[in-house]
Image (cartoon, rainbow, N blue to C red; front, top):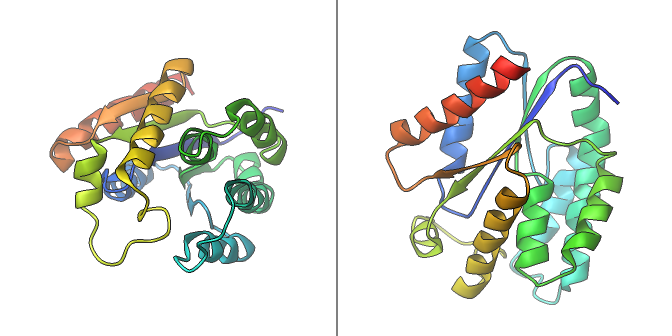
Length: 208
């Protein structure tokens, strides 16, 4: 089903500078008179925020990989129906901090789960809503994890091998979706990284 708005998603490992670039991207698009709706995953609506708390709670050490993946999908299903689809139908530009690619990378590749099954389930929970542009901020996992300040959540606490698998997952996703997914090396200055982001956004708007 054709929708009037745009969906731009941002992905990346912990410590990749994603949040800073999202903030700058939102301001850039507002300056271009886009009606912006910013959301985060998991979360974005009250029910999904409760699921987020469960997922990131370091006390939930016995959570199975299957349970984890399905909780992410449940949070996404609620967000898509409650916020994303109505916003796109309204002509808004939706900026989402993580989306289905995160589940593919973190649960599919990170936990060595069935990626094709996750893709199929993702199509169901998103009602085939797909980003118009996905930007992945790429950074060495050692450097990224070293940037984290304060207490780490349940995902951030995982070992380096896990995060390396997630990174390789992101690389695979980008190779498989070259039109939609753009990878930006984020171990540069904020200004240099945003210049790359801006170019991809401008390319999208020129084709929108």
